[in-house]
Image (cartoon, rainbow, N blue to C red; front, side, top):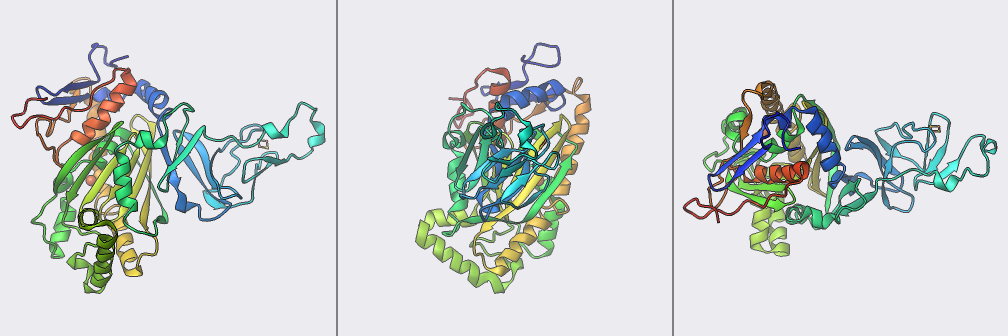
Amino acid sequence: MTDTNGSGGPLVVDDPVRGLFRVHRSTMTSPELLQRERELIFDRSWLYLGHESELPKAGSFKTRTVAGRPLIFARDHTGRIRAYLNACPHRGAQVCREAQGCAKRFTCFYHGWTFANSGELLTVPGDEAYGEGFDRSELGLGEAPRLEAYRGFVFVNFDRGAVDLPAYLSGACEYLDLLVDQNPDGMEVIGGTQEYSMRANWKLLVENSIDGYHALTTHATYFTYLKDLGTDLSMGVSGTARQLGNGHGVIEYAAPWGRPIAHWEPRWGEEVRQDLDRLRDELVARLGQERAIRIAERNRNMVIFPNLVVNDIMSITIRTFEPITPDYMTVSAWALAPRGEAPELRARRLDSFLTFLGPGGFATPDDIEALEVCQRGFRTWREMEWSDLSRGMTNAHPGANDELQMRSFWRRWNDLITGAPAAAEPVPTPTGAAR
Ligand code: FES
Ligand code: FE
């Protein structure tokens, strides 16, 4: 299948010579394409499950949904991290119905089978009624076929034959390293989970999460607020875009909002300046001037294909989303922070996590409104067929306000959906011709 509109045309037009990149809007509305995405993308890609710090001790667990499947993200009594299928081997009930907790065992409420936190079936009420073919050792909790972690980020894959996680992450490893290297004692997820939903296709949030172009218009209220607080906005939002392989992409840029990692901003007050100076000195001593300044002063918004966003900006957000229907998704977001962070800095970080990135903050409601009005606009997809993502395609050095990072996603998406592998975007010469 190469199209859904009956015209025989492609879903993605990729013309580097003319500097044109377009995506057919049926990709945002078609139930058949969502089904193909489930089979060809979500059932085969490495998908984020959670962060190791969310399971602080043996027995800790969180229930999550990944690729439509209910899972138990758990640390067993040996300390090993597991991803159990949250479905009873007996007759299918969800074994764990709590959002989180700490348990030595999981007891299914339907008929009372009990499982160790390491998955083995322990007790079966009335098991004398079963014949000799009933083998308890075969009836433990099932697990996601693959589970691997990279620097604390835990992923699962439902394709047993998938490449290893570091190979999949490809160039995204460099950016996860930049994040984790912020603190010699590592990072931890803090606070609770932000959960919300949008009446929009999940790929709109992929695009939006790495879209520098929309910031000044969609988030005008936030920039006015910063200005009213006396923030210097003269630097604007400027930086670079990169494709990171396997559909991952990132923008890296300077922005006026300051970062609670060695980058003071006047509205935070003098009382945290010394803490930030100390952090900066530690970073420079440990990592060298260049890497330390890059970590401290640059913002990074990254998408790890298909549905993980890691935004390292005025706070660090981990965000993942699940398509429910072509025009509806659920979103989960967590704040990540350096372990042992000074309380004053932690307070500013959490304030940013709520006031800018929270579901009631400055940014997220604006973004939800933008994506929902796009989705409503897509009702005209038969007449207004194409969305344009050509920005910066003839630019030798694509910027954070260009769309290279989104094209990277869409090329991978198109490869997997149509089975027609596409090359990475050629680097244009300064005159604009592709080479
Ligand atoms: Fe779980 Fe029967 S379905 S014990
Ligand atoms: Fe936004």
